[in-house]
Length: 154
Image 1 (cartoon, rainbow, N blue to C red):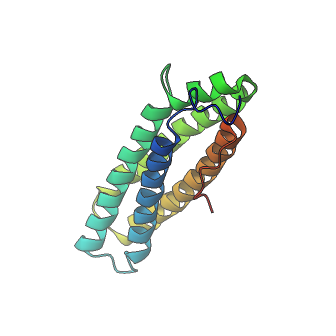
Image 2: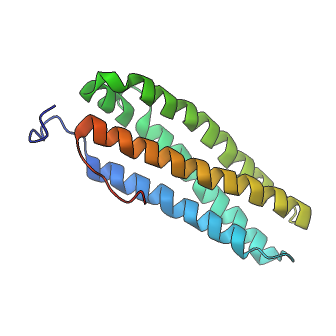
C-alpha cells in the first residue's frame, strides 16, 4: 500500500477516537477500583458499577466496530493480507475481553462486601492489563497495515 495514497486508507481518526474512549473507560474503572477503599461504601460500589458498565459498553462497541465484513479488521486484512493471523488473535482476545468485562459488571452489581470487592479488583486489574496489551497489539498491526502511527499507546 502506498502511504501517500489516502483513497484506500480507512478513517484512522475514527479508530483513534474509539481507542481513546476505550482507554478512558478503562482508566475510569481502574480509578473506581482504587478509590473503593478497605471499607467500601455504597457510593464507591456505585462508582465501580458505573465504571464497569461503561467499560463493558465500550468493549462491545469496540468489537462491533472492528469485527465483521465491514469492520476495521477486514480493512486491515484487505490492506495487508499477511496480517490475517494476527487479526484472528485480536478477535480471540475480543471474546476474552467481553467475558471479563461482563463478569466485572455483573460482580459490581452485587452487594458490595469487602471480599467481593477484592475479587472484583483482581478481575479489574486483569481486565485493565488485557485491554492495554490488546490496544498495543492493535496499534502495532495498524502501523504495519497502513504505515501510520495512531499514537497514544504509551
